[in-house]
Image 1 (cartoon, rainbow, N blue to C red):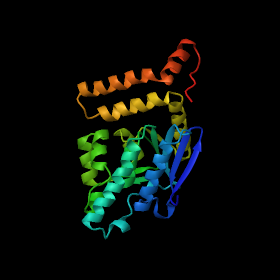
Image 2 (cartoon, rainbow, N blue to C red):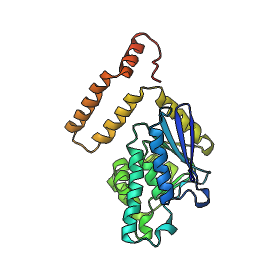
Image 3 (tube, helix red, strand yellow):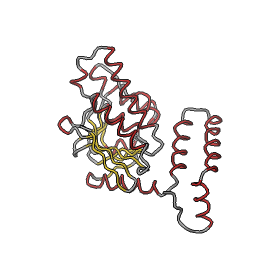
Image 4 (tube, rainbow, N blue to C red):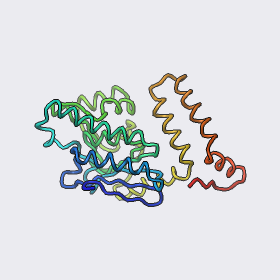
Length: 256
């Protein structure tokens, strides 16, 4: 891949967006490569958790490539938005947890990629913005939908309609990110969290994430039915038998 670096160690699949000359801005080629990289890590038995980050210390993803967007027709913009939405849906629908290690600017499409991840860890120098309205457009890769689900409607309207930038501490305060750490501790924190998740049953982790995503905008009754089905189906797995047996035998389970 031209713009995506892959590293797999200890069941952690690290995906680095590497277009440093453009602060990792996303054009159609980068979108396609990232989409493909996530799909391949999902299918890789040697990967249990995925981490997505950006190359360098300035930018996670500084947004979509504005120069590439400048002359787009409505039809071309529709296809570009579809490409970005397909990529972010691939991330969100991953049965394996996806952690965003946000090492700098997460603007526009970069913020939308982070929103599609399950967990967001920000370096202290990270900055967040959905500045599209300043360009006469709106977020097109899920920002208008995922941001309100994460931080609420009022704050989302303020950020998207205002287009202002916020720092990592403000992002933590409003619930946009889970953790803020010094820049030099970012990847250690992401890997430590990944290792914590990896100690648990992979099928159970995937089922729990599905319950949260699928049930989030359902009625409580419908969401509980989703949980009921996922809970019961796990009792047909070797993983459940190993986990409960290990507990009774007072030993660590061997899930992998």
